[in-house]
Image (cartoon, rainbow over all chains, first blue to last red):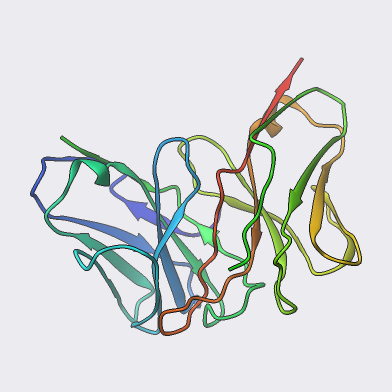
Length: 116
Length: 114
């Protein structure tokens, strides 16, 4: 058990809709990052938050946005869903600021999103 | 950006030692090498991390040569439950406003049979 929980575990949406995915980090972990994992691929970095501020972003459009709250929970919001957004969405928490390359990440089990 | 190359798949039998090699020719001075394991429908799980030479824990060993351009994850006496995807990662500082941006490749699918 990593102490990181995600909800829901599965979700089905239709193209054009909006979705909010939730993550609860380990207590004391100030950094949370979100990843998208398509079938057969490795996780792709979406963005990272440290103490409620975004401090890193991957190659994802602005319709992917996030929030981090003081209670170690966070959200990933995706607007105007596209078919290609179907994937496993993973959140990971870490103890530090997320700027060191040796920080250990603790992943949740993910939310499987299907866009029809 | 430090990228990694590792075999797409490997097959083994229970009780054997498995060595998965990862190349990272452009590794930076301050980069660490980290390996994660992922089972289907789960998030990746940290296995081991190292900077140079050899690191060993209760699960695996990590061998890193002096030039650090490659690394080898060694799993002793694998079992069926070691069937998973193994990712080799080299730390990558994000280019947009800072922050750590770990780059996952496609990983190595290890299949262990009886």
